[in-house]
Image (cartoon, rainbow, N blue to C red):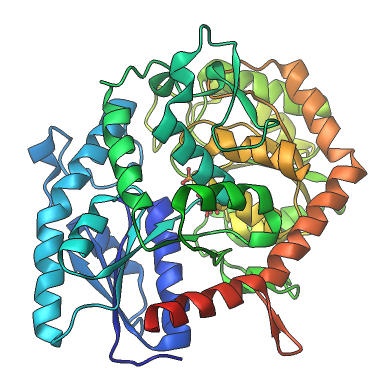
Length: 486
Ligand code: UDP
């Protein structure tokens, strides 16, 4: 489909969790159209992509001038990873400085090719790209790398700031635009949102960027329409334009059912003994659906006190577990792990009894979630982790830590019924008793497992072509491309 002469320019936000789905989106568009795709970002992010992309990749990777020191950020800060909250918001504001070089770049590409790009696909956090597109008479489509519930809730909160008119943190409010049942307490939101008074740096950034994104020609969303019907309806009311659900942007191998311990990830743990192969062998030694997998994603961690309670609760639950463990808050995420962060002789005890495996640093998450022994995932509910887990029918235990994770976790429990929230909101304190109770509640509940398996099937169906009939996400992608071309 499509004319190979056509060109699309993509602009993800400065975070791995955004760049990776953009890259996958670029591949999917190219697979079916042969369009030229240029993906734009800051120099270090582009350099990193170039070093990991295969030589055969046909995506043009182009960097824009950016110097974090000009924005009072530490040198070489170009992604949100391992930044403090003030630095994260600093990076958000700094990203708007890309507007002028981005405009120059698109103008240059237009002159070189003798015609403008077919469209710009920009991150929902880069609303200013919509202004650039309008000034150059180019269509702008906004890509929200999270799901429909997260996208709609973010839009709702940042547009209407409903939490500001409440008397206390404990008062519940309905997310504007959502059905009455979608209630949340102010105490569930991040401190920086709760205290927002219109002059805070978070509202100052998000309100205009999301408003500008709402003015784009349409939205792409990394979800499957069948799994989030209500949220999708709410999101469409906000965008007033098409929303194409083209997800899940996961490796295709995860979406067919023939997974057979083939390794996705070549990155191992800290010690040579913890290669992806070793993790899989360890999982092989446990019965089906018996293992709890625990991970808080690539950039978040929990406090030392909470890490201790979590470890005790897991031990008392008696369930086998595989924990992708990082140093707690207050320590460098890349620091050497210290035994004092866990109960005495915890790792030794768990390892001797084969009860638990601690994977320091990076775990082969996709392999773990695809393995038949994995029975539940205690997760921070980052959208990639949530989709990866749901696509394999693995129930979730929600422990959100930042961003829209609080909405993802809520949606998993309240809308889908495929998990339970362990923490309510971003600053809850959890006891070992609560940890044990929720682990048992999820892992011993056949109803939750059955629902999770149904959601998993819907996700895989959406992304598959069977007997000549395309799933909804494939159809949405076709419709998106043909709309652009028409
Ligand atoms: N991930 C992984 N191993 C780890 C931690 C994370 O493979 O030890 C991957 C995970 O599979 C997911 C991504 O990193 O694709 C995390 O993205 P998510 O949106 O869940 O959370 P974030 O890291 O952006 O907070």
